[in-house]
Image (cartoon, rainbow, N blue to C red; front, side, top):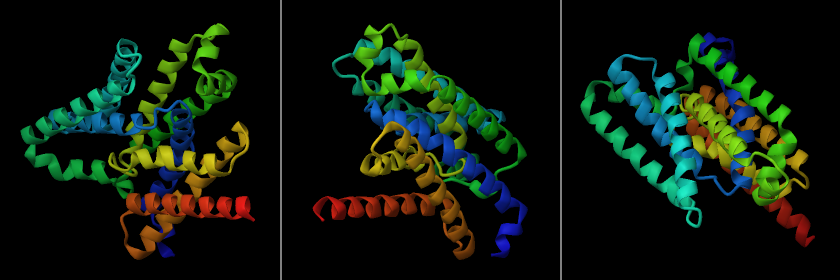
Length: 268
């Protein structure tokens, strides 16, 4: 366990713990609103931004963040245009993100190796700037949820009722989308764009399996994510495994255990 004393591992642990709070919280709201696939969409768009960042010499995470935020506005616009088929907006933007990323990859073949780290995660390469950015996003997300918990609860469970009660649903929809974009953009260097949706959705699936109230769901998603992040990083460090993949596999194991326990109690 000497790896715990190494500076790069300590930075990885700090970054992972912070994301272990924000990603599952935003994922819970997305799952409750039937928008779980938005994580995949924004992560693919973010990778296009990362590729452009490498191509232009600009901080990749920042460019990926701008791309993700732009994608959230596009998704909301398309959701309004296709009210009956709202999921089309997610499919269209994801397709565009993948296409743009592939074009940028072909234009800058020399940085493909670097971009691979953003696809599968490179948590051990987190630097001080990364941690500062992750910390800022964490504070913003926690403040937003803390100040608007009741509104977000109502919006997540019944958007029509929220609108009838006078809640500015458009504003809160944009807020949730932008916060999700922020979280995904800073998460892709930790677990990778291809795995970030797992950190958003699997803790939420765990909470749906065992939680009996919204408050319990919030606690459950954070506890599950933190267990997977901390234990996954330790396992990956000791046994030289891929950190992002280890974290996601642990999340799946936890979900299967919770489902089996629930089944046992329901039939017992």
